[in-house]
Image 1 (spheres, rainbow, N blue to C red):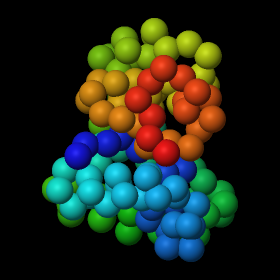
Image 2: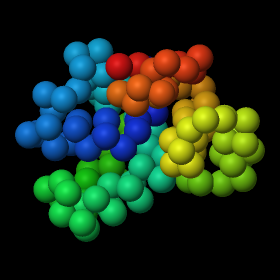
Image 3: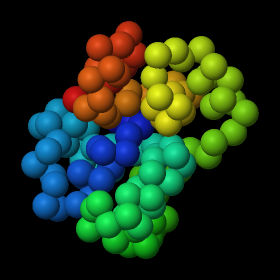
Length: 128
């Protein structure tokens, strides 16, 4: 299985005290992708996590998160590039970071694992 994650999903998956915020479907999809497939992480997700860790809003160790991602063959960071921006142009009604995260998922042809209500109500492939 291959999935793309949004910011909250990745934080909740890695922060043991927050894992209970994931739905069973989301947790199962992430575990399967982590062990047997690919978890795609848009770079904007990591930028957002860096920001909220520096602000003290979560207790996640950002350096440890990066190391885990770097060490695993099952995690792939999706860079922000012109192809992602071209996809994002056609996504309307979302905040900029959500457009870029969704565009990254669309670029890989994967479902997006997200609890975002706007995304769940959209026509896009969103898992929660």
